[in-house]
Length: 117
Length: 115
Image (cartoon, each protein chain N blue to C red):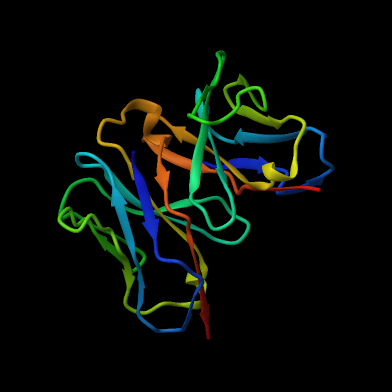
């Protein structure tokens, strides 16, 4: 079956540090890959996505590249801010998902990021 | 943007009682909603798909008689954990797709603790 593995947290960084959160997946074919972020007290929000190999998703200074050869989708940001403190979830959607079944995501366990001033 | 409201945010209950969690799409209609569960240090797992006006579909290993789902209107789905036990203590979260743009919106989650 499909699965997503994220690096264990929590991750604690100082402001302006470089961030990497590793994510690897197991799936057949070419799933779509996502990073979601959950700020305190809020619902998960889509941060970025990539739908095919070698695609790079980017948003708010975050980037992740869909690497089929290593089945990875690592999240990176060059300079984190205190406001980036949140829980980050990597997720995949199977290649054959369509219609409203795009809610049938497989998630990783989430990584708590805390950024200190 | 579209908002999904979920409540309660947290609930503590005694073993054997039932707990209802509500998930509402506030400014769009959702014929389908999704319920997920996350145990500590584990992945967020899809439990079931809630379908307006028809029965929910459950993922393998999820007891449909224990986790009752009702999707009686286009903006509300409820998950009732019946006869809750300590092993049901978990983080439950819902989502609703906005079909017009294929975006998925999540509630803020419910932390359930069963004593």
